[in-house]
Image (cartoon, rainbow, N blue to C red; front, side):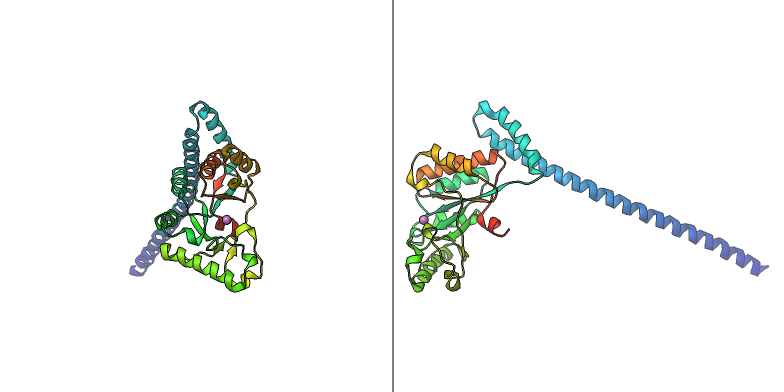
Length: 270
Ligand code: NI
């Protein structure tokens, strides 16, 4: 009798354990399904937020234009938003020959617009303008080397080239603690063999409005905007008031067309 009782007890205990196991299995499966669903909806809401942010950025930049155009501007921006999902065109603004008296105005304008640029500094111009160079660095702009006293590197001995680069590297490093690897050779004249002696990456350009030849702002803006392209590198100079004004108008125009401004390293890394 006690044996039979024991067997029955074991049988029922077995059933209870089996039911419990099945229940916990189902619960675990449900939890997993729930997590997967949550992940999916979180991803959706993150991309949703990004879209909203991009749109409000665009609308904010639209507000900076004349009020009469703002409705039209917002419509244009909505059209751009659908394109952003496919690919946002990127472009780099680069400034040579500074720092100068006008550089701070440029930094103010870029900051207002949330834009980063690349500055290729002439070493001898840094003295007395250290605060401007430090601000550039602190605000996230890319700093590059444009030789010490703006010389044509291909006309110099290798030793003289190294000295031009080294002195400018030191001037930039003394202010920022940053060792740049980017060099913009004056006049775009660079020989590949120089890279054997100088471990720097030369950065040239493909959009050149020749801003240093004119103070006609409209003309500079038109030249750049009409030749803007995805991956383009724009060459300008921050030692002219007209260039600074033109650069900020170029930013407004190209941002409204959906362009994203990046520092040159982002384009070279691709
Ligand atoms: Ni130059």
